[in-house]
Image (cartoon, rainbow, N blue to C red; front, side, top):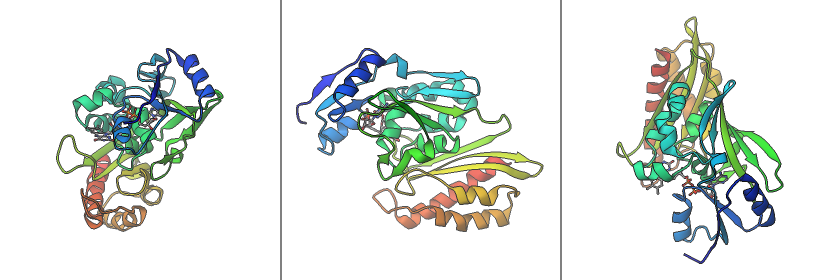
Length: 284
Ligand SMILES: Cc1cc2nc3c(=O)[nH]c(=O)nc-3n(C[C@H](O)[C@H](O)[C@H](O)COP(=O)(O)OP(=O)(O)OC[C@H]3O[C@@H](n4cnc5c(N)ncnc54)[C@H](O)[C@@H]3O)c2cc1C
């Protein structure tokens, strides 16, 4: 690894000041579980690392009015153990519990998982299905809010610009009648990178799906919302015909690649299978 300057701000105003003065050179480091590996491999060569891992202003989980607020530097372990997340966003809880291994979860943060923007980022599909919003402050101190599905722009490309800091993620409290379901398919049950994943939220009323929010991971250049599937399902009841029609539509929504974890055709087959299972779970 090349030599790198290191700066650790004590609070948000110090962070802001530093980011403004060093916009072009500063790279944030939270848990470092992605970034250190990328620096070792030469994929990234930051000149100045800005350590935000202990900034309390960016950490923690709380409920305010009708939103669940998650600081961007909150660890995956804290999210996995949080009673608030368990109660209101069990699909996010499930994804956090399956990210990496206990050591990784202790260091890894939700903001780092999203900012790294891997198509297989485990927290992305649940946050897409929960219609989360990402809050960002730029180097001049201006804040903006981006819906999760707009945040991911393409392969490893997000809405974040140089000098931006993701500060928090907000999730609108799901309707009490909403049911969620999530599956991460890996080559083994623990410490596995995702081969395909699905997260969905359904609101059912009078024998039909009133509202569907569906997201996939690892089957496109970025984590995706499946808008056409959602539209097709809404207003209908889940039966054999719907499952078969969804199977076809789903193949048009996803564009998986083949790699060492699975061929394109395996990913297509497996995604359809886990989608059906999750849809039925949230329907019944
Ligand atoms: C052994 C191992 C297993 C893993 N398994 C999984 C897995 O199963 N599933 C999975 O999804 N991931 C996995 N990962 C990847 C990684 O742990 C996660 O993506 C993690 O959440 C990254 O968070 P971090 O805080 O470590 O990010 P960092 O490495 O600190 O940062 C990653 C990127 O995000 C940027 N960044 C960080 N925080 C912010 C912020 N607040 N605002 C703006 N930019 C920011 C950084 O500049 C950097 O570019 C694994 C990693 C390891 C080492």
